[in-house]
Length: 535
Image 1 (cartoon, rainbow, N blue to C red):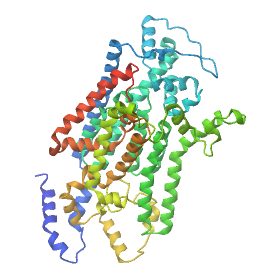
Image 2 (cartoon, rainbow, N blue to C red):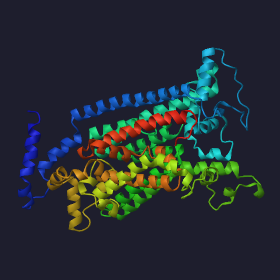
Image 3 (cartoon, helix red, strand yellow):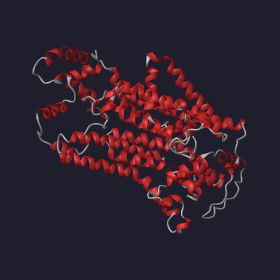
Image 4 (tube, rainbow, N blue to C red):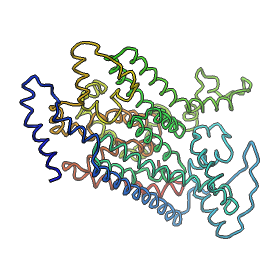
């Protein structure tokens, strides 16, 4: 009885299609307006479903972190670490360490040693930067956001623990709290972004659960910058899709303070600006210029923190030194410290990793790269017109969707409202179509075109392009084994995996995907925690 009005309305719309399409009545009439108003308002049942899914997701996210930490402790108790030098704490170069008495309690001393011995791989650099700042040239490869949060927590929330377990152990504890808390928040934002893009609560929930148990899970529970990058990247996407572009710029800028690839998030702003400027040309040229300038300034703001950090490194390492004492990168026309460090200390460069001895690392990265390539190719086959036209051949309904990547409706609202009837008849019809959002034929077309919904909707297109750029960089330029964690914060991977799991044509994919995640969680906690190479 409750759903009867909706069913009557839907049947009326479908039965009226021939009549409307064969007459002079404008398409998209009153039979759609009721549905549109109700869908925009959102039913209480749908809102409750989202809230319930989000609550369950939080429990899964917390459970996944506890599971990873438990496995890490388990493997550490059974195996001897390959490198035991992590606990060595030499004095800082530029200032003396704060003198700390040995913790008086035996239990506290054991906790302190356990925490300090758990610091492995890049965690050593992050902890050292927190303690002593940027002492050496190679430390500038690690951006300052994670050390900042570690220092903030260790000197405020966990400051009372310093007399018990020591400052360094408190910093380690703060690092674990920051990474794991940021991961839980990133999972929540991924669910919210997925709901906006996929418009399917169940598919969004599946994708978020896969993220909770992703193959790079060990890095999201360690003192690494992956969690903060994922939080500010995905959180920035949520704000961008919600219409809060300026807030999104701030979050994207913070992602660039966590990892260098955070500046690639400016690509979303570029995509949005390109489409908005094109749409603005049909209204006012002055508005198009304003949209372009605004987009350019937002991109500059996203890149500014990373550029400022490079300038900081240049000032510390190059400024005031004699010419014969300068490092090679200091004399370059564009003195980019980050590129020099990656190339000089880690051998990163185009095709430099293509060596026969690196074949095991290519095999280690092959699952995540295969998933990325399959997701991109599947999308290209389903929506080739979007790749050819850079998204301009998306349907009008897709452009008017809730995601704010194509539409101009939340940008420069005052100018949009004051634009008058300019242009020819086609433009006026286009405006009329926008006011009614979609036509009746669009509603029916979308209802019978599942290949253009969910993962294959136009809203996913910029995410797929971003993933393609990231995957190409990981394969051709970086140490290829890093691809597992480098791509782990890309939403389309989880959307595509969710699509495969739900598809009856790919029944075996669910087993393969979960087996892959489980194997890499076990392998990662075993190898990484004991200072053996993983990714």
